[in-house]
Image (cartoon, rainbow over all chains, first blue to last red):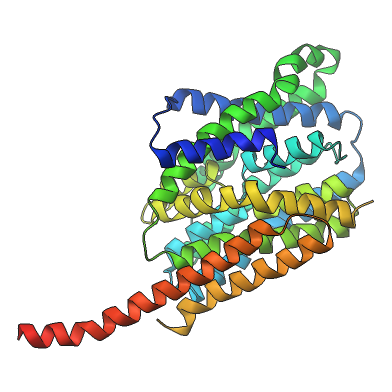
Length: 309
Length: 66
């Protein structure tokens, strides 16, 4: 049976396809995504208080390596089968190498609803996976490393909205001690309800993207479904190598399977304006996100339970 | 339609069917994977048909106009 939180996503798609006008301002959408980032970071920070050790550093290095690898997996598929130019292939590869915080939030909600344990430091991995794919995607698109300069690092790494919010909340959750508990009724208890509201909006957006799919998009649909399966399998392999729990295997697979539609489009718009932004966002938000939320995430949770201890 | 255009829908459909098989093995629902695989194969087939008929129709229409 479909999870109640995920059902709101389906409701959003149905409402959009039926042409129902559900008023949902951009400001509310941005506020909800901000809430999710802060809540995930805060929960991770609180959990990190009990889990800081040397092995975490080693795992973090492996996760960054994973983030560098994913766009390298996507790029040849886009170039060879899609016959896309370097710019568009690099831009789409960056989207698929980075992560979707909303997909991660859905996976966490499903794990918690099914009482499956996972490593509490995962928000750290979400943050670590945001950036490497952007760098690799840009290098693939430009064919050189010149674009990775000080201004780029300052803008995309230090002043990146999602990274800043999640790292900041992670630090507050970690260093806040007892005082952080005052925030948990809002950021932890209300999390599933606010996620449901966010998914309703995402359903509306995904429904809109599905409507804009042109006839000549069999390749894009195929890629946007194949890549999360391959990324999910790669994530599962990494999680097994790192010896993660059942929930940890599922979450690493979900991080590998998800595609960014907030951080990367903003970075690409700035650094690669000649790339077709519509194609990337249709693939990541219109196809991959619904596929992940409705089909792929439940599969990888079941796979995690099957493989994990 | 070239091999390159058709190859990815077929590879994806094959992977979806493989995932549906594993879903059954691990006790998860395979329905979504199967529906997607079949839909993708049908979409690729229709697309291929449309492209090939459009190509065949082009010389005729050019001839009539000239």
